Image (tube, rainbow, N blue to C red; front, side):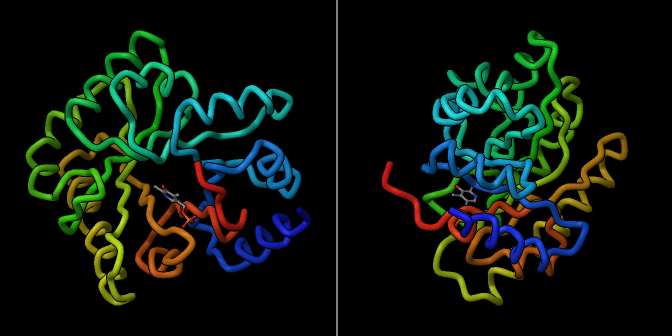
Length: 222
Ligand SMILES: *Cc1c(COP(=O)(O)O)cnc(C)c1O
């Protein structure tokens, strides 16, 4: 398990200060999170609300963890997600954003969110295509309770590194364009890059990388 600390140190040493690391702990036990915490890691990413809640219950002695939801969020889990996560990276529709905003208001919380974009057609991934996002953005930018902080992008499988990097660059351009449309928002975040492609994302201005396998090793099946 000392491995986790070593892998963290090695990864961190490669990141510029503008990039924050989310340790993706999905399918790994709370003990793995504890190891990473002991090595200084504070931001953790989970894909499933229930799985995260179970781990949080085991980690109540660690007060300063920040939890990021990075997986698809079903509408019936929105309330729990708002209660249990500080960041939600996977907001992929106007309906979900509106619901999050309403429930955040009811709960008196103001989660930070990223809008998930799909820059190439990908049947396996959710997200706005840029045309639809531009169309929805003026009403998104009016929401009062959630804080829209940036974009999340996940490239489809099977791209070349050059294609992947170009897609990250497109995400950056789109975020800058949206920021100009809504100067009242602080759209400073680009959540992009995973174990196999984070250097390309960092080269294109990622501010959050979401890394699981490279830190925790292969995931056991769900
Ligand atoms: C699982 C997952 C990651 C981490 O993937 P690794 O390849 O294990 O680094 C990052 N982002 C999302 C959305 C994920 O589902």
